[in-house]
Structures are given as structure tokens and as C-alpha cells.
Image 1 (cartoon, helix red, strand yellow):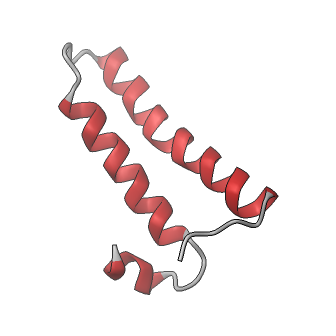
Image 2 (image 1 turned 120 degrees about the horizontal axis):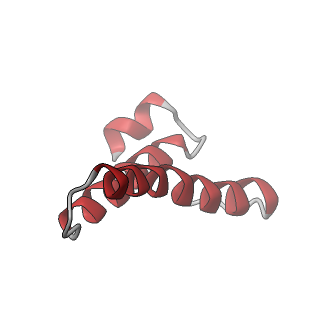
Length: 66
């Protein structure tokens, strides 16, 4: 995560991108039926969920991770 964080220092984007990748890979790991619909849902969830959490915490409440 430090390598990605060095690209966008002190913005939180590194954590956001790594979180998206983590959610995607964990969801794919536990996915039973690899259909086009299921993979689409997993990809959308991997992008939307961390982005929404990051937006609420970082922008609305001004809470960031170190």
C-alpha cells in the first residue's frame, strides 16, 4: 500500500485504490457461481462500497487514516 500511497501522498487515494482491489479479490475468492451477472455485481460493489465509505469518512466527517 505504501507504493500506491507514494503516488498520491496525503490524499487517501492510495488507501481507496487498494481497498477496491482487496474487496474485488475477496469477493471473487468467495464467489460460487462465476456468471456474467455475478461478476458484474462484484465489480460494481468493489468500486462503489469503498468509494462511498471513503467519501463519507474523508469528505463529510473529515476523518482520514494515517
